[in-house]
Length: 96
Image (cartoon, rainbow, N blue to C red; front, side, top):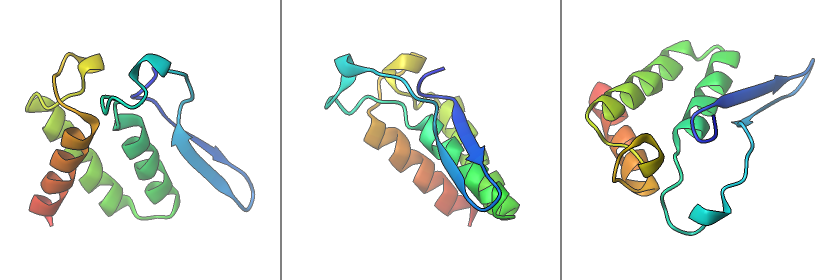
């Protein structure tokens, strides 16, 4: 669903990788949008570019972050978009 589903539209020469579209005007400007779909869209792009190791590392960091309970409100958490993204980044850095 909205906030967690990545997508990839791949043509013969070009690919577009983005979160599944939707509208959430009630959360606009509140820093509570779930960054998961954007991050997973990035992993789809990396896999398409044969960067599987990097994609797997990001997916692993995302899963660990969510398991620690660091989530946006739509997933039952109390963290901001920035806090979730920052924690995922920190987790990736730990794996490097």
